[in-house]
Image 1: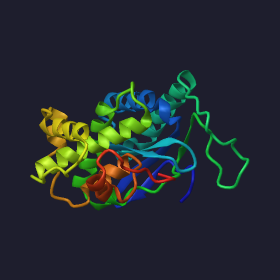
Image 2: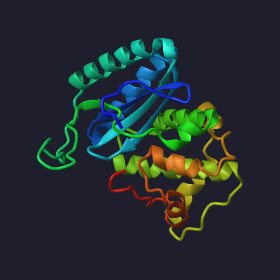
Image 3: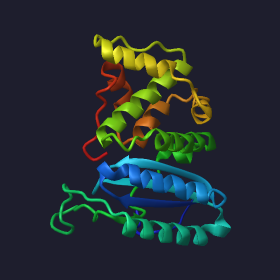
Image 4: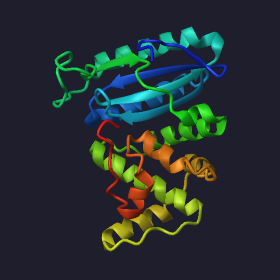
Length: 240
């Protein structure tokens, strides 16, 4: 991996991988900025998707695909937009480790770095999974509630999406003893699907979808099994 590389040419596609280091408890602000950027520049983007992570700092990893002929222009637009955003709306991370003090140190909070993560394999696999990843990212952005903590958001969004995936596949909800939890799961099941959710629910045949949902949210690779055992207790990987 060549840290700082802004253009990756793989399988005839031009990829751009950007990590934005930002305190998790302020993710709602960053997610809103990402959504606004992607909507404003949708004609420049063939694909975008986002992934929560804690590796070397609290961050959101962004994957963009551009047309070859406009890749330089897109990189300039990205850098200008997020430099301005981080200057105008910095986050405060009381848990950050002083940059440079330890081996494998965190990157500094309120910064962005190119190419410090690998493109997820499922994005390389097929256009359909790239479409699913982009739709999942848009859906997470829509569902993310600024009034809730990062932990509550991840738990509620992951549970909601898994319930909807089970509904589409006609898989019954897991049995739970807690009546309040059972009520919450049933309310997710019965929640009326709007356009973006309807689009998202069309991707039901690939067995990797629960893993991909978990990957977006920085959850353990055991996410699907953990959901079945404890629907509101999904775990995050220590470096997820």
